[in-house]
Image (cartoon, rainbow, N blue to C red):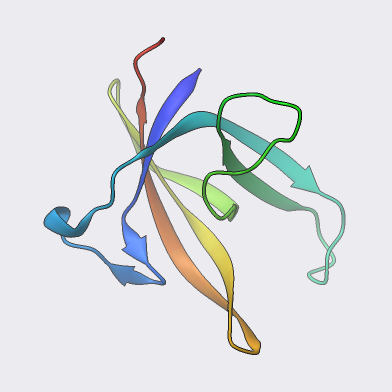
Length: 104
């Protein structure tokens, strides 16, 4: 099933509705990573585009995703994203608004 995913935060800062980026459309995939530095399995949600020989995520992964709201038309997930900048890696809260996308 295809989903339109809109990121509602920019590096942790909550965006106003007029600042929301265009949604990325693809298939959501939840996977379980083996033990990490946290010494526990870590859930990872990714959005992938059209299947091809090389799968590229459309957005940075969402770690430890949780559904915080859901109805017939949409669901809202939140979790942590990591991004690298300069010489550091930063962790920040991200929120995804996920709505079913029209089928091709």
